[in-house]
Length: 151
Length: 98
Length: 266
Image (cartoon, rainbow over all chains, first blue to last red):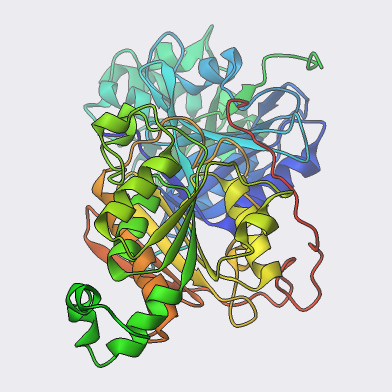
């Protein structure tokens, strides 16, 4: 099977980019709710200790976002975060944090990792990945103009 | 009604694939012991030196136990304890080299 | 217009359609259509427009034919690997129909040359494979008032839309600025089922022929999305954005600008 594709509507992508820009110079993070590879909702989450090179989702905010996703009948489709000064590539820390320690098991299998580089704030770079056996495999992210499917 | 415990995906292999298990315990510490009895290997992955590992968030009915009593947080029947891996990362550098 | 005997035979299946007739065929022969790109999309577009007798077809492409193109770029062939796509397409389409004059423009479109290149054509078909060109072509067509048939393909799906400046939305009404670099389509190898641009390109050609003949309902204000695996066709309404920076009531984009060529960067 080809690498899975993450589809997102223009306005939802804008929410992500706006959030990432707002948090500069610190890393922004958030959760994407959705289904079948399609983003249905974007949930910015505070970082517990804001920093330009690190983020840890505030536990309360993380739980709330996951609850919102679940209440909307959606699934945890993805996690996004920004690299204010670096490329839209997973760093060593990103890799470490995505898998259960001393294993190659993803903490959130099936969740896309979306990384936004704001190295050039006027020209953000957005890339998607999926965690597979201890590594990230690049997954295409595409704008989808179709309305999110109703239940 | 015992306590319902939600298990993070990477550990579900220790609970026979179940994402939720039931447990009887008076507090979080006892819960971890009880879980270990039923599903050997769980406690070692969740704790270090008797404390819950930093990257693991445990919520009692939606509240982070760090804001309650941590491992001493009391439990009662019907409670839901969710064990959820923290979501974190970094860009791996303090300043860009541009 | 006086048709030769050969033309009456060649276009008989058109001429016998009441909606086309001799008048319609004459319009096709007088039409001038520019194709941006002679690749996966451009190949079937040019082929069917040549078959239909579109009298002048401009093909704008500065690339050369590569082996990996031949899985879908049917205007070319094995013998032409290494030659200019614009020239290869010209040979193919003029070979199909001697009534058609194919003008090869082996150039890359830029803000500086696009008005000049488009000047002699009435309809533009976008078969490009990158966002900067797509937006440049859109903006130029809006500013020049030229009908534009725009399309895109990816893996097993494609989409197509017709832009009638002044009478409907443009590409920026659908998506105001190019998506960030790193997103599809990026310059990395993205697979596509060979038939997909074949179908979508033929849909583009359909819209061109309808525009020339003035028949049927164009995909104006509608984005048609096809998924090959599901065999589903879906149309999404695209309203004209009154605040569109290029075609809106108060345009803020009044100059053509070359987009960032981000290929290879991310």
